[in-house]
Length: 216
Image 1 (spheres, rainbow, N blue to C red):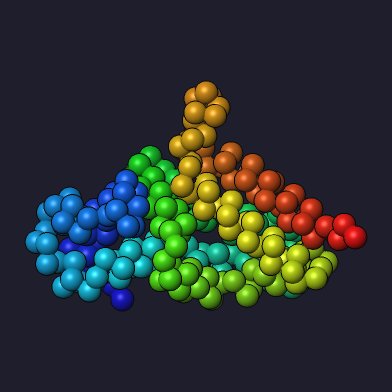
Image 2 (cartoon, rainbow, N blue to C red):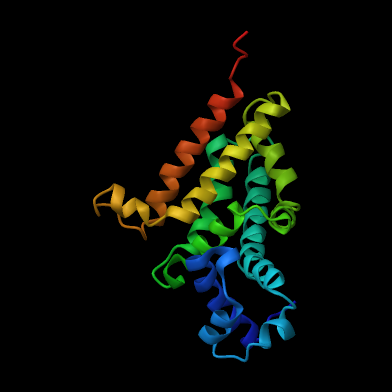
């Protein structure tokens, strides 16, 4: 469904409010004030704060997922459907997301923080939203990662995917912390540098997890 100009204006205002206050603390009145619309506009256009949050996330994530699916299909086709290097699979997961969300014009990373904060709140609809976000791409990427790792036991893949997701959510919530940790020497808009290091970190973790042996 194509969004109207008013809906997009509300979503952009909501990104700021959710980023600053989290989902629970976000005020419908403040969102409408930021958007310059009547307070009834959210119910009219979205139905509820919950529905607005979902639409905000899908507005950004659905196009990114389409890019991911296309990149994975092309990579597999160019590799005769053989297992891809793990780093390439992880790069396809990470780079389109961060490239789309990190730029000097990306509203000061508001959506990244809004989504990151929302995903860690214990609300049932957040779990449903994560399933909606990932239901199309998850099976294909689980298969690609498993093949890249030599098809270890599924619990190893499950642990790895869980930790991968935590890394990405953590980056989305705390991206600006990188400036503090680096003492300002790292450019927060250096997408390639960020992705290269994050892909290396996640890939090494996936490999290590796949090789964990029971203590006993």
